[in-house]
Amino acid sequence: MRKDYILKVRYLAQNLGHAVLNPQKDWENKWLGDLEDGEACPGCHTSLMIAKPGRNYVECAVCGRKGYLSLDKDGNIKYAWPEDNRNRLTMMGKFDHVREIERHTAERYEPHKEEIQDEMKRYRQMEQFTVKAPSKQK
Ligand SMILES: [Zn+2]
Figure 1: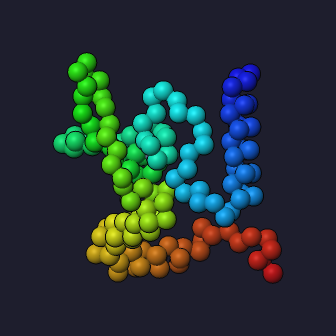
Figure 2 (figure 1 turned 120 degrees about the vertical axis):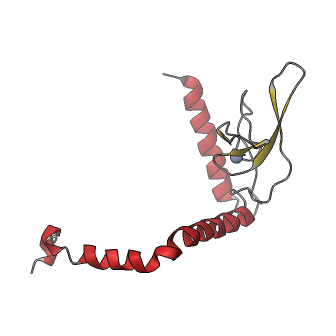
């Protein structure tokens, strides 16, 4: 068994309890954990990044912050993390993210709205494949 994991979970639980018992404090963007080697994002501390060709930045897969890439003198990747209010772990970032999802959903589905509603009707009429729950069979 990894005792370091047990200690990490205990510390996490203590921090969570402390935050719940102290709602008057501003916990937004507060990191109480270790700073491990290899972590990249200063917001959520994950190292899981989305990199796409043609960009000079990566995007954190968890919170969406942008980190700009450069290479040090040995050719190793370095990140620069400017303040980013699109961080999905902040309230402003959450609002932004919801609007982003709404915009992408509308772009994708709005042109096909009538077609989708027709398909919905067709599927709802397929009662031969529907099994009612025993409680609804009265
Ligand atoms: Zn992040």
